[in-house]
Amino acid sequence: MKKIALVAHDRKKDELIDFVKKHREFFSKYTLVSTGTTGGRIIQATDLEIIRFQSGPIGGDQQVGALIATDEIEAIFFFRDPLTSQPHEPDVQALIRLCDVHKIPVATNTATADLLIKGMKIK
Image 1 (cartoon, rainbow, N blue to C red):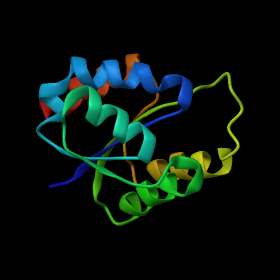
Image 2 (cartoon, rainbow, N blue to C red):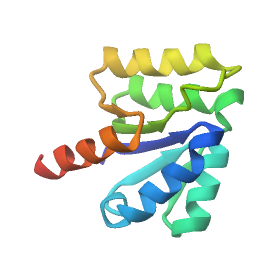
Image 3 (cartoon, rainbow, N blue to C red):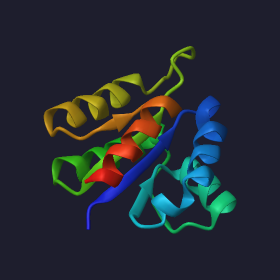
């Protein structure tokens, strides 16, 4: 079974947590992976099982990227903060590039995330 990745910048973590709580039934049907802090917070809020990687800035984004490259990811919900400079922006761009190369859908906000879920339910 392919996995779904859950990632969020610091100022978007609460928004992603609320989104996952709202769609808990959907996410419970998948194997979930996440960067460290985000995954820990989602686990606390939802009791979902999540495979946690390193924090994004210290390699977690690249660990998710490795799963994309090996065709193990079905979709990414990556709530990005476009108004705050990210010190690991090159890693973020590399992750988005891998999604484009491997044709992996990525939702970066609640509007695209809602549409992605609707599309995945049709599949």
